[in-house]
Length: 489
Image: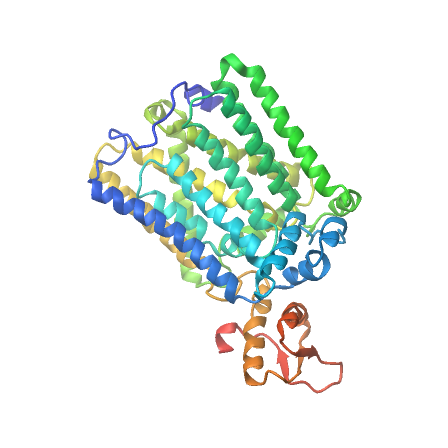
């Protein structure tokens, strides 16, 4: 924080222009700029369309089926049952509402999370335009965020992760948008309402979002505190209003299950040590574990080079070189959010020695860190005086990002996450059996590792798929074992 202030980043009185500065952005022809903007829109639209397509084709998973059977099938259960942390309350309530409106659609359960994922995509796209001056550099940064298999799949499944992503990145995008507006009392109270809403959505769907939302609120109101020097008391009051609204709304939502929430929270979800958490994160989440080994090595080295370059860009941003960057404040805000959230996570895991739970509980860190890296790379490229050389630098960044994106692309039909790929095959299996004989009650047996997949398949019985689980010694028509979906058809 001190280095940022020393660089003159935060106390800026003027409001930045939305358009790129001709002195700092590339002097591209108008057509070139239109092409870059069109490609950015295309990436965002592709991310939305492909999420919708996969949400329609991929089979329901065990956790989704548990959510429906145990919590989301009735409003009372959604609000009053908390047998496990599987009940993401806002998600369960939204699924219950979606069933009333779209119950005839097999995957109505995913409609709420799909809508939330649209907000996440748009927030990421907007944030990239606010912190990265170069229109072409925005493209690889946005692609690496939206098309990583972990983020991609978590953002359409019928769970609370999509809501938390949309709320946290929405709060970040709103904070960046505030930099384009003159500070006023009306804007201050709008900020209190918007941040309270984001807090409620994030905490109502994922309580583990609390750290990220605390940081986002601190950065948002802290920046307003710096800008509105004559109305700092009002800024404090607005922050207090946002806090009170958040506590009131979240308290009302969790009032019936508060004791259960505390009890399950004290046990820890997916309780592992912090070192195991980050080892698994690096080995299985950030880098596709089953991908081509050579591509994995290339992707790892490419990311290492990008991080090293980004750190140089961050140093330039925090030094005197960054004073001429018109987006230095937005970049500083993103870096403060990303580093503070990461530092808080590390402190909680390593210093306090508390379990961090599942990696997907901290999913918002991924887009925030990549946005911060993109901002720093933009600052580094801006130091290059020659416009052709800047173009070469952007191409190099794209080439370095390409192996990582290629390694971690989501599968067209399966969920590339732990054993979930087994569960995601269920819909295709049932549809083939139903097409062969719609009147027959198929007897299905599963090897032990597929027992969750068979449970998830029971979700489809409400839509006329006829089957039952085979008894211990009973003859069966089909057995589930390790067979990827691409071999089923």
